[in-house]
Length: 119
Image (tube, rainbow, N blue to C red; front, side, top):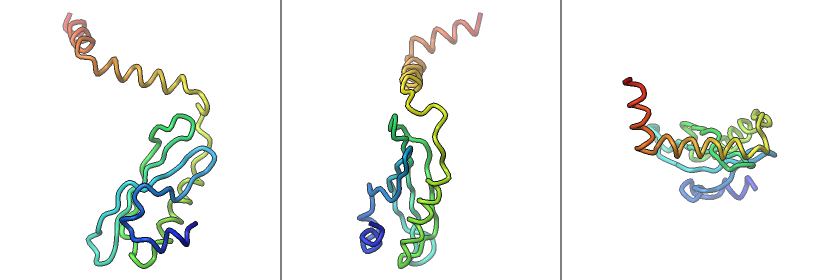
């Protein structure tokens, strides 16, 4: 798979999954020119596979245009360091977090909290 990806132009790599393990999957979300000539910066997002929420971002700077394999090796090494999340396969945690986020964005709830704090 890596050989096919290495032959592609960098900008064709957007949305490509360079690495995954049993718990996480990564996607390239941004490729931009570096300050150095003929180099690129790559941003990768890592998703959890049980809830498909964003787990982390990985920024790789100054990758040589001719040596793309280096970036895929770095992404793979990063994913191998990640272990099974403590709350794996517990989607209720994710649902609760989403619900709390919606409540906190609610303007009426925020005004109610501000009134309580001023008393």
